[in-house]
Image 1 (tube, rainbow, N blue to C red):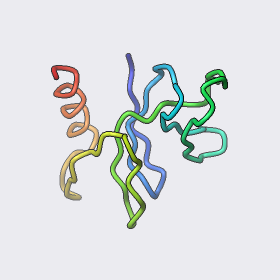
Image 2 (cartoon, rainbow, N blue to C red; image 1 turned 30 degrees about the vertical axis):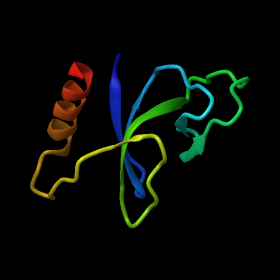
Image 3 (spheres, rainbow, N blue to C red; image 1 turned 90 degrees about the vertical axis):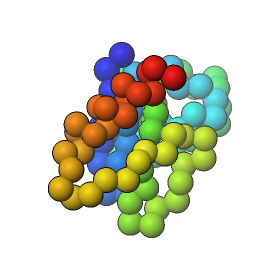
Length: 92
């Protein structure tokens, strides 16, 4: 499964193509908005990506029941750090 890192300005998100179920958080890439899927009857649309992990930025609230990503400094390679994080999550 391929994962992407998306910076919305308010969140740093790790998203994937896995099925979005009731209660899952997802981002609509067309609207550039984050939603919680409250209706499990809605089918997945290709421009909706499930949020697998997140890091709130600019005092944004934590997305309940979504893995919280570790903080990083400006000097760190964000792409490398979160790919390493994903590898650790797969082993658990």
